[in-house]
Amino acid sequence: MTGQSHDPGPVERAVLACARTARRHPWASATGGVTLLCAAMIAWIDLPLAHLLRNHLPPETFGFFKVLTDVGLTGLWYVMAAALLLGARILAGLSGTTTGHDQYMNLARSAWFVIVSMAASGTLGQIVKFCVGRYRPRYLFEEGLYGLDPFGVHMGMYSFPSGHTQTVVAAMTALTLIYPRYNLLYVLVAVLVGSSRALTTIHYPSDVVMGAYIGFAVTMGLRRVFERGGHSLRVG
Image 1 (cartoon, rainbow, N blue to C red):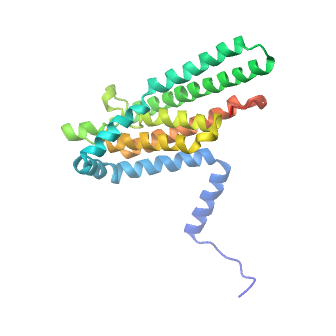
Image 2: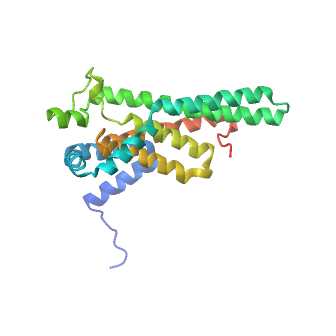
Image 3: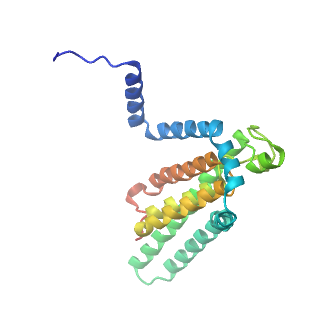
C-alpha cells in the first residue's frame, strides 16, 4: 500500500550509518576500511598465498620482479627528487626574467613536495612497523614463524607495511599532481613495484596494501599544505 513508511532493518541501518560516516569523515573511514581489509588478509589470505607464490611462481617471473623491485629503493627516489630540487634552484638563480625565476621556483617547490611526501609517509610507515612488529615472509620459510611481535627491536621483523611500496606510491602520487601527462605510467610503476614485493615473497600482500595506502594518503594530505595560498604544484 502507498503511504506506508519503510522501516529499515538492522543491516540497512548499519549500511546507512556507515555511508553517513564515510561522507563526514572520508579519510578516517578509508583508513578504517583499509585496516580491516589488511587484518582480514593477515588472518586468511597472506599465509596460503605466500606458500603458493613461493612454490609455484615460475623462475622467469620471479627473476623479472626481483629486478623490478629495485625501482622502489628509497634512495633512488630521494636522489632524483633532490637533484631536481637543486637544479631548479640553480636555474631560478640564473634566470634573467621574473617569469622564468618563478617557474623554476615552482618546480623546486614541487620537487620539495615529493621529498616531504616520501619522508612523512616513510616516518609514519616506520612507526606502524614498530608498533605491529610483523615477521617477514623469510621467517616463515626459514623458521616457520608467522605472526606479530609488537614493539620488537629486530628490524628484520618489520614487514608491515612495505616501505618500498610506500615510497614509490608516495612518489608516483606526487608526480600525478605535479606532471599529470604520464599518469598511466605512474600508476603502472606503482602497481608493478608494489606487486613485486609480494610476488617475490619479500612482503605479504597486506604489507603492500597498507604501504600503498600510507604513501597515497599522506601525499594527498600534504597537497593541501603545499597548495595553500593559491599555490599550484602542477608544472605541466
